[in-house]
Length: 67
Image: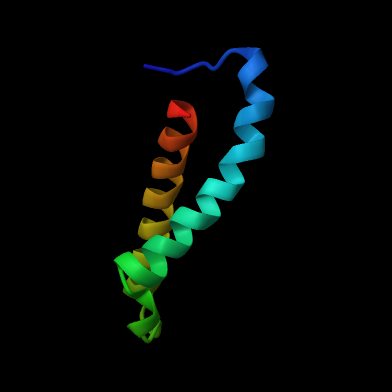
């Protein structure tokens, strides 16, 4: 299923989305998953970081659409 936003909402979406993404990303990286404690010397650690950023992206998208 593909979601299409009305054209009138697209400008609002791209104005608000980056702000929410930065806030959610910061919250997930430093508070939720505590990735600052990871040494990032293995590929698995970078995979975890990409996973957390993907989750933050999805959460931000849903929050912005609900707003």
